[in-house]
Length: 347
Image (cartoon, rainbow, N blue to C red):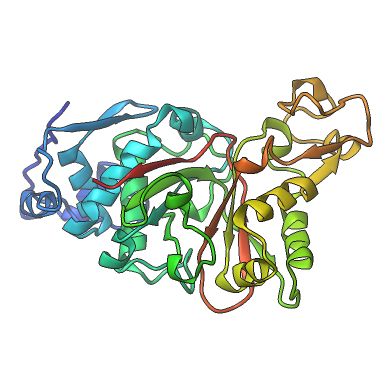
């Protein structure tokens, strides 16, 4: 159905409870999407309400602009958030991300939204202190709208089609902005070929952030080794299925690394070389146990040599680096689901 369904409620019916009864929520109360509220939300885009943006798996529901607006209302978005949410829908339905597999997997990954460019500032997004946490309306509601779209349009129903064994809190909302002003390197969207003055959305299927606590290192080698060691732990998809990972580096850590003359590429190459585990340890568990022939490692990895060092990812370019966060010396490692992130422009 291309047009959102209209419901007329008797005065005795609580609209908040009605939304619960229809299964439209993420477990928290949503704002009832009245026609007036949806019409106001649609003023945030010039696209016609019936415009099909994407089909959302696993139910393959049609994410029209109107239906996206309905979910934005329920999430608490403002009209100016609409272009970012629409861009996120476009990005996460790129076949490269394999959203269908991610939505139905027992793995706990979920799409993370990273916003770059002027939209971060015009929407008042948080790219600093507590960037993954509570307190910012744009971050919270844009991320929540994306999750409601996955559930309400995509029909990723926990325990039914969404088979995640554990899930993680990012399945409520998972949206940050890059702290471009405090980054010593080009921001993510510029690195990927967009102009600095363009606004973009990057979507990456990943786990919750894993903290990297390094308060003392004052040189790039010591600090980067700590980060690489945090990345190189068993139990994640990467040592078996490979695929992209993301590192969210706090401004202080980024400054320390750049001060020693390391470019972002130098940093990635160091992490690629150091974030490794020997075959003998990788055999202990993971996706395939001791059946190493099934692992998606580079061809040069000798599977018969227990001392061979297996890289976390197939190549250095699969380590994505974003600078975000505030004061303090904590960074975060985000293991992926095994598919690449996708970046699109905000129209």
